[in-house]
Image 1: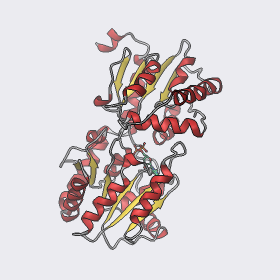
Image 2 (image 1 turned 120 degrees about the vertical axis):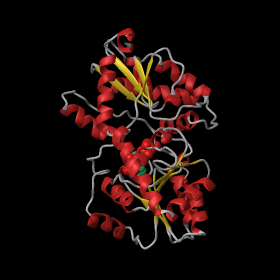
Image 3 (image 1 turned 90 degrees about the vertical axis):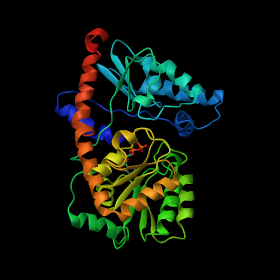
Image 4 (image 1 turned 90 degrees about the horizontal axis):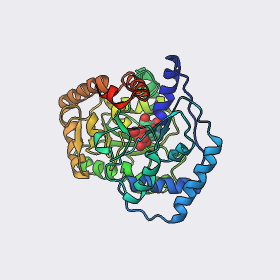
Length: 361
Ligand code: UDP
């Protein structure tokens, strides 16, 4: 979400839309509750107490006082700030869901739904995430900005410099996953798949990521990952703060890119990799199959063994891998660039001022 808004807000402003981006505040307890909600919406069995919902509401009430919501249109992202809708006046409000809520925990969804229903419209990234709602729902995919530091072309010296900085040589094929250290990104599963490949092909694995400020679980997951990687010098765990050029360079330096998420709202890292014409192995979950058509623009997998098999296939068949990468880039160019995204948001804004019949014509 931050990745997109960083690029989207300035572009909207250049187009004459007076867009501003605000962030709500929350304490440790709030983020523990919202992380639990996030996991439960992704189908994990989590226990909630009345206190959890009270903590959520207390922080919401504080933010209602602090956040300025006077614009013509207020665009609220994800569950954390959802309760700001209580502040709605005559203006239009949109709720943008970035997460995979195809099989949400019913209790949490029921709690959030009471807020969603107060919005004018909701936006989801994949048809499978839509829910029974009394408001209009739109399907709009996220996007990447090809001119951003994360995605623009880089000189070879920059790519080599980043590898050097992290002590990585490119004498063996590189498998890379860029992701927050979150269980839903399955970093342990990635290591497992890599170890299965390593029995047959000498290669190295880079797990690059950080932990999000609103994620209390991140450090624990990172510790488990470090422990599992300890004995293999060909596994590089790179703790990177938000450094777009470095992420870009690592993606460009890789032989194959993997995204072995267990759940995924969209998976921007997949589009980022495909934009760099890289062969990608990614889980068949959430928004990933929108980006990868199996055996055409990448390989989809459903298990650790499936991921290992696909990685081996790509490492053993460079021509096939190259073709997938080329097709992937073309697919991203046609569907997941920020220009398409802005056009769809503009149409969505317009639709808020027309009644349903007119829009459906
Ligand atoms: N990312 C990054 N540094 C990190 C981890 C992730 O820059 O340490 C970027 C990544 O390149 C992508 C975004 O953060 O642009 C993550 O988006 P995605 O949809 O893949 O997953 P999310 O983190 O939103 O679940």
